[in-house]
Length: 155
Image 1 (tube, rainbow, N blue to C red):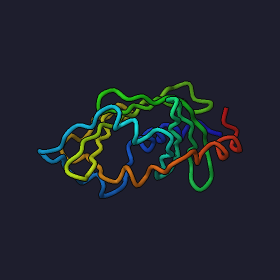
Image 2 (image 1 turned 60 degrees about the vertical axis):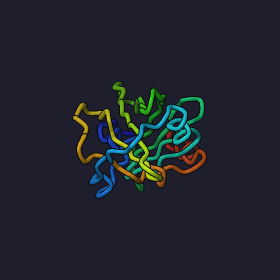
Image 3 (image 1 turned 90 degrees about the vertical axis):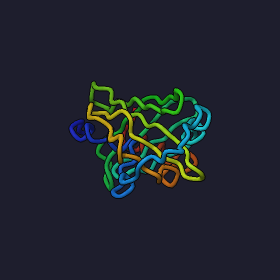
Image 4 (image 1 turned 60 degrees about the horizontal axis):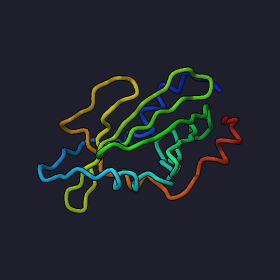
């Protein structure tokens, strides 16, 4: 498995980049989620992203695969929540660098807003129109990664 494409995986681990989903602005009446609410969003769920899948275990560990339809890399790490922000720190097999991505969450009415607040590559978040509203649709209950991770040679 090559480490080169891993620099791209951070963008999809927790950022939920999805075309028009990034066109939203944060409403003025939006309220920050509590740490417990943010933990409940991720704990025990698998994120199904554009080019990767990642499992957020209840114990704060992560496990993921990169590449679709063919897996090109595996990665693992940790995730934690502070206030309304979840951060994942992941390291790809064969790559010494740790990639960090964070997302902050708010609610306005029944709508959940998510901002990719820390980018793995150091680029700045879009504080004006960089909010997505499809996060919950991309998180599926259970571990949908471990079997593929093991088959792909994950550590």
